[in-house]
Structure formats: structure tokens, C-alpha cells
Image (cartoon, rainbow, N blue to C red; front, top):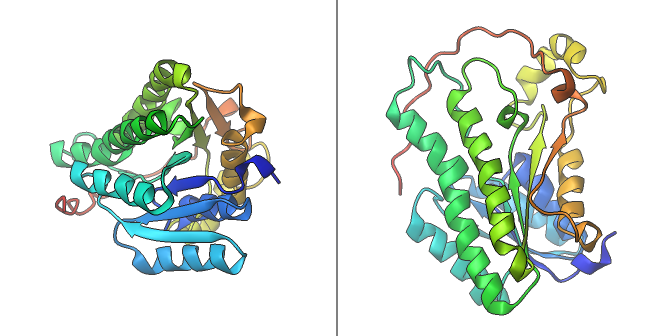
Length: 270
């Protein structure tokens, strides 16, 4: 238990399921006030909020299309107006494009970079300005990926967005250190969540030789690292990316996979 986190105002993006939901619940368990962001999965956001509340925590939800700068402004304004400010931002929302670079044109590239890199940039600067205005010692945590360091075929847009996210985080850490705002990244390995669990479990025998720890990650593995990095226990930690992958990046020889079909075009920006 990190007692210093009790009462902190935390915004977790993409928290209607998967890693975002686990991270939001972990902060709720520390006594934080948690704003659960979602774009379209209202039912999932409801479940995350209820889980936090049933455990005795405080949580609200708010929808926003993070590809829209106006929506980002409204999201930040909501938490500030509701809880008079913000202490922690977790940029977790993201999209994963699996497609050949020869097939996926500008629309796919733009959507990946808009969600995975542009949105965290815009949201971080909005939140940092608020933290500076309040004079709080804030924390911004960005959810990256092992693909930022080493990747595999068909992940060009995703890998580029996550590598950019880590570079951006290092520079923001330098710029905002004088204001006592820390900026770090988590780089998860393979962690089954709702949308990937069935496929990964079916392929488990193929994956295990590539993960030295001998198991897939669990959402709690990532959530517990997130809580630590946003606590006073990590007060001297900034500008870093922390790999949580069961040793996978140390060898990084993922199973070969067939070329995926081109997915549907992204939804228009709201």
C-alpha cells in the first residue's frame, strides 16, 4: 500500500477494459479518486467504475475521442472542475494496427499516430499546464510497448508510435522536472486481455519458448508497476521506460506469423 497516493486525483485513459481497467482499479485500491476515460465502450467503463466503488474507492467515467483536441480539453476540464485539479495522468489508450506497410496507407498510419502519440502529447501538455498552475508534484505515465525497442513484421505504425512516445516522454521529463512533474513509460510485453485472450491462449505453446519467465503477463503485473511509478517510492525516477515482459525483450525472437489481412478503415474523428 502506497499511503501517499490516498486522495490523489488520477485520470486513466482507455480504462474500459484490459490494462487500462486494471490500472484504474489498482489506483482505486490505493485510495485514489479515479476518472475512467473511454471512447465507445460505456459498458466496460461502467464495470471498471463499479469495481472501484464496490472496493470502497471513488471513481467516475467520462467519454472522449482523444483524436479530437476539443474532446481532450473537455476531458481535462471535467476532472479539474470535479476534483479541483489532477495529480496523475496515465496515458493508456491506444490502437494496434497489424498490417503490411505496403497495404496500409496514410489513413491507417494517421490513426495510429493520432491515438498513440498525438493524443498523449496533447493530453500531457494540457495536464502539465494544470499541474503547474496548481503547484502540485504531478506524475505522467505513458503506456508504451516492447515494440518501441524491438518489433516484428506488420507492426510498423504501432512500433513507430510507441518509439515516438518514449522519446517524447524523455523530453517532457527534462522540460517539466523544474516544476516537479515526473514523466515515465511502462513497456509491457505480451499480456492477454479481453480482445486477445482467446487467440493467445490457443497459441500458448508457440509463445512460451520466447518468454523466459514461462508465462504470459497479467494485467496486475502492469498495474502494480504503474502504481509504484506514480508513488513517492519512485520520487527520483523520471525520463525512463520500464520494461515489464517476463524477460522477452532480452531475447526478442517472437514466433513467426502470417501476414494479416488489412483491417477496416478507422472510424471518423468525432
